[in-house]
Length: 279
Image (tube, rainbow, N blue to C red; front, side):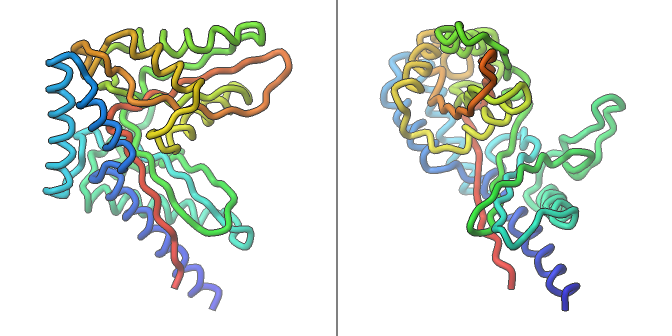
């Protein structure tokens, strides 16, 4: 009986993971699409406005044809929420990997996962430490997928500032985009982590990308405004829309530290969540 229950849980997680990946790759979240459409209406630069039109047309065509929005289907970042009665185990990790492997064939996904030194491609978008799985407590079992492309991930940055440098946070985020230019396919969404530790602040920055982007608090808006004043614009061709949104997630930190991380996400701010139902 226990073996049967374990098999059912494995299959439910694998199936839900594959479904969430397909949704994330093909259908843009409504809040992101709404922000892109607002950018079309507000953008003053003609070339930039046309690029935004092209992005929106690309999104609609991907949905119509049921194919990935972008050729870089990314690596899978997975957030697994588990209720107290279900402990995380190797079986659950294997089930998520199975879902990723299935989606690689079914969606299909570009095989992006390689050994960092030998550069051998696994062919399944799984491997040592991949997919990246983050386990969180909750009242129900869900799986959330963020496909993360390399163009945006490669220009992400971290800084270990001093507590006296709070006024440097906005400058650091804006500098990150100034250095990135058009590489991450703007307009971007920026996840900003503040606090925790060297490793923890990077996790905060990525988790910030889980938040809806159609609203920003005053601090987030101030950072977004600073980035947009750079006028890098859509695809780096100039314009007033360099960032669609900035989302911040904070955690307490050491009294002598002020860690800050910026996780850059391209205009294809892809994410999807599935509830895992076990028969």
